[in-house]
Length: 200
Image 1 (tube, rainbow, N blue to C red):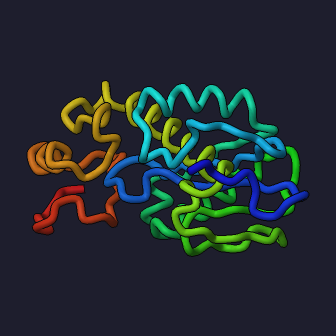
Image 2 (cartoon, helix red, strand yellow; image 1 turned 180 degrees about the vertical axis):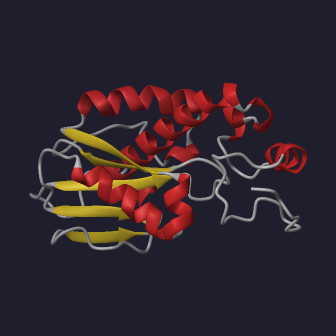
């Protein structure tokens, strides 16, 4: 089923989504995207439903086609200070801060959001599979974050961030158990399921 071009016809809407909430390491990234009116893209969908190759191809298309887009980042240190939910909202706010045009409404993936200035927002569960602008934001947030983690990989190869991107895979947790955490790990997260003592 084709994704929808807009929530409310005739106004400028920005779609927002984040990537990296469930990771054990690295920042959380978010994107805000304003697409042209009546924009169509048959391939564009929730980033989790697409291969890495397709996501990277779509990123180029979105960056070329969007009226504007921006990326917001909140570090692992900030996540530990304010918690991951607030950090996700802050990353979206930081992305919105960078848009040169003020949107008239925000389409947010998920069921919660902290109000941004006085702009109306709509929280849409699984919105990245419903609205093109949210799907576009999910693609940008995911690809920018994956790129960031892959670039960290050569410095910390044992964690295999080039393949797990900081998510809690068995290989990632085995490496934490063997080598301990590094400065990129989120200290307030359960890095090991058994709550083994770790030296930070």
